[in-house]
Image (cartoon, rainbow over all chains, first blue to last red; front, side):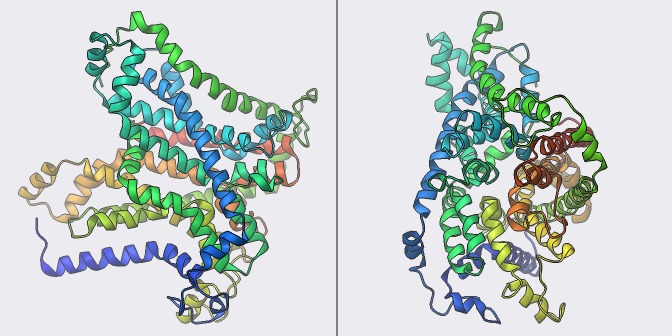
Length: 276
Length: 298
């Protein structure tokens, strides 16, 4: 149905206004990063800096161990996602294809695990990691992030496997594949977009964590993740918003890039995971 | 859904268990066991958890103290207030943007991308953005308030209890509504066009189509989404902790923040665990009650 001209104008205007207001905070982060620090202390505020200082990113990378923080975050996320995916692929396939005693209740438990407050789980994990000497090591965060990721990935992957016809498994097995062969040679390649979306979702969960990193890594500067590093900057340089903003952009960039390029897959994964 | 078990269950049963085993072991080690440890800790008088030491004597002192503490009831009230305010706003904003962007217009993919973008901003970064916007001396919000005549001098957002609550709520809404809009959009796209065509033939107006087709068809998806959003608000740590630390005067101290503060701020891990266990119990009960209202799902 085509809308009348005034209705269309109204539609465009409201879409533009909504987008502008909702995305403005992100725009403001960029403006702040590119402004001279003393310009930020002027009223009325400038909605685009007079002389954008693009060099801020290079300078902040040189002054602060941001690359170290980013690589710690990336290592933690890769470890947590790798660990979670390797158990979730098998479990998701099992929950989707086999009738296992307790499978139903395991599924329910996994759903319930999403309700666990991280602030509760962090207490016993702290005790356990202290006992095993893992406080301050990235491994503590890898395991802690797996508690966030495994319930999501298992459930999402089960959802993906459910959408793949069982005839495919059967055909593979008739052609002489073992059940493992059917999974690895036939089902996983078919499920590749779903696997990618699930893994990226896990990556985002790990990258966004602050509670676990703060608790386990605060006293080990060499292991700080990006979010932890940013909050320490916020604490010490309460007035230097330009630098904090520049660092924040560098930290948010990987996730924003994932989102911009893979919105379709991520959104698909999000909705597939929660739909039943 | 009909469960066709093409993998001949009788023969491959053991394989089903074998495939589950690694996940079960991992979940047992990093979720179930710690959960038991925290319940156990909540019944002991423990400062800093030392699992290699013998267990302290069993006591319900933590819970006694908890239910007698005004801080606990304050935290319950703050959590409830925040959950209601933020989830209602996320719902309206999320559904509104979804309905808007679901229209057919040029540039729609871009608009879809933009409205959901805050979802991709890590919570800590969202805090940086809003802490600066609400900065008490040079923040943008103060300038807007003064220019519009809503305030005659700068507001110190983080030292006034209700202002701090508003800042926390605003940040959480901005971070949380995209999830509602993503889910609603997916729900909207699964409504068959035929429904609308049939309604139009029968002379239904746009408003009638919204009330009688769109909203009822979306209800199941929205129900689940809202429960997930509420659980997120209930348990959130990063936004509140980095933004206000639970202050001023505990005005933004939710149960999650109180749990953490007791365990790691005051090193009363037994007491903190007790707060956490109660939080979890409330989450589970609330989720069960809410799920019943959205039948056929979960």
